[in-house]
Length: 506
Image (cartoon, rainbow, N blue to C red; front, side, top):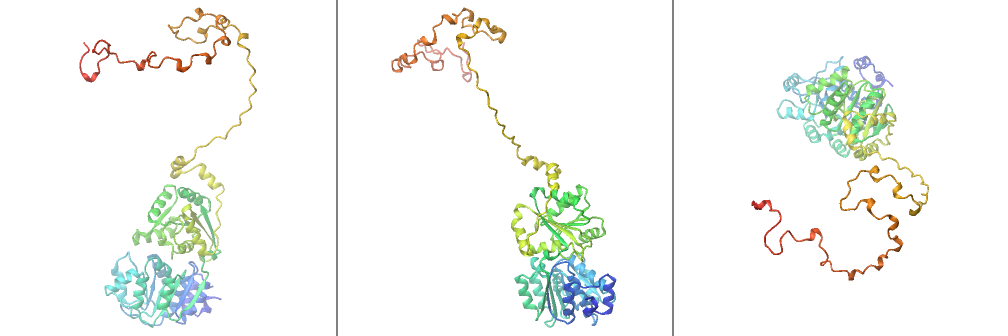
């Protein structure tokens, strides 16, 4: 099957061929004929399958016949983010080159004057985010009563961002007799409730819902300590043949810190997150698409709709909190038949999150074996983790050494058989010691032979029993038990005078 078999006009087929496409993707092959037949449609398809072209192409042919009016767009496309809205606008400009169609982009972060001017001139296609659209509607700058075709793109993302009440409000202001197309990667209950309320007998299409079915993406999870994530990321960026990569973080503060860290370590990295104004975000995306930088650190604002050719790797620096975000993050690579690799860092706190991802995708993500990379990072930590590793590294315990059995000590000779003390080296030659004056010189003491042998001494039990000894009170008091230096026949103090009395002893 090719695009000519889908019933598209010759002018549109020329534009498609000029872009280099000749065979439609499965979602395009099923959705385009239904849109041309003016049927309502629910399309469930993973990101990166050509979903945008599946409604842009037939809309161009549908809108080719008709007349535009001021402030009354003929069709409306709702997108959750500014980036995705801008990308859809680019698709319309590219494929509608051979048609006289006018388009307006209604998004926040840019001046409203130019957008209002375009609406006054009349537009065939209005591409908008819900917030800016409701703002202009309340100001009376736009009328929706002439809109005959509504596209709700990335409906599950709209749900996550809290736009469902706005979408319901917008739907009530559109004509009841209209064509509605709803595209989503998943179908949670609130989205099904929305479809049941605002779609009329829709055609249901589902193509490769789990992202794991995309065989063009090699998926891995990397078990890593939370403090070692930056080391592991730098190692993979240097060793896994990365040409261009998008690194996703859960928090905007982490996006800024990680981008700065990569730049300090010699990588050509940029950042994009929700705190940046629209002009800065567009400028950063242009740098990434032009190859000025090859690593883009991003929050989930870039997870959907960001179409950059040749993205070789996606790194989930943080395991996504919502499983659906995983589907869209890794969909930034392996697009349009190309191959890609996706790495998800799993810290101990991410076990539940990664299990939810595997439950959604319907398979276990294989663990990536770091092999020499992990050893290298542990042996030579970078500056970010060196101090932490030094503080947390356990002390190296030496293995216990087996004690060799000692030979039994030979029995010593009896004391009587030893050489007389006089024949030994003089004591003063062995060690010079201060002689004790109260003791008699060693040479004046009785020789050992003249002493009473130990065997002839009275045994200990022959000593007087304890009861027969004089009471402790009658014994000579110890130095610390003696009375203070006070004479028995005088009340005068003979000791030192305490300093606190401030008197002299004289």
